[in-house]
Length: 220
Image 1 (cartoon, one colour):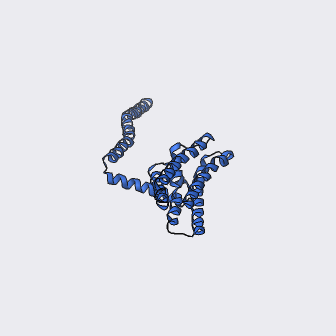
Image 2 (cartoon, rainbow, N blue to C red; image 1 turned 90 degrees about the vertical axis):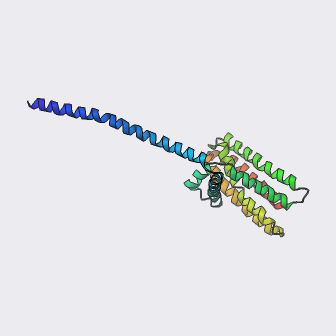
Image 3 (spheres, rainbow, N blue to C red; image 1 turned 60 degrees about the vertical axis):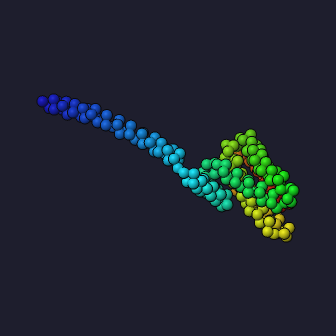
């Protein structure tokens, strides 16, 4: 009689587990569907938002990355933000520098200076990125171009200041400071992605890139 009671209890336990199994499967299926639904809602909301909202979001992202360049602490948050690349910021700062230098030169030389700076920034970024990748750097093309473009901003400031000062040595001091600022910000990010034994070969073109832009900002 005792064995029969135990058998009945065991059968009831097994039956309870079997009855609960469909409920468990249903809960797991619902949990798997939640991220998909949330992703669909995010994509839908992004597609349905107005142009003004999109522009404001892009401007906020540019501001966050620009803060990482202006305060190059090289923390994990800064590195994460800079890896989340975009080309709007580099395009804006490239146009700003080309326009500033073209205005500071002669009227006849303005278009040529603008074209030279514009082409130089993009071609220089491509060459620096290609060199880093050939040396084994773990960096994507657009990530590198994004970082190099954002780090042009201090040179933008230097070129802007030179419009208001005529004393050469003061302009030279400002441009040198902005060159060191840009180089430090770019090198701090790039060196994390380059093998240690090849860092000098990879970072040397970065220094030359900003040195030429700074020299151009000084002499124009």
